[in-house]
Length: 107
Image: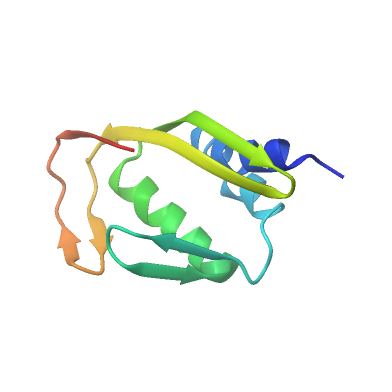
């Protein structure tokens, strides 16, 4: 069985590798991802894949770097930064944001 750290890194590295299935193989089918800023909860692997595709469409050059990873027993806390240029539309619960051509960074 993989370590918690290896599992967490695999999920996050799937972004840079442009391989969401790499992350999906270690995520539980009943997973929940919470976007605190927008107050959204994404439930299940289909939601994970839709979210990945939504961001990849808006930021096809997007990259992600883990800046801090804390593991204790079977829990992990991950701080990461992602960045890219918005050259595609970004779908959001707040509406669709057209391509801006601007660079962004989020942590």
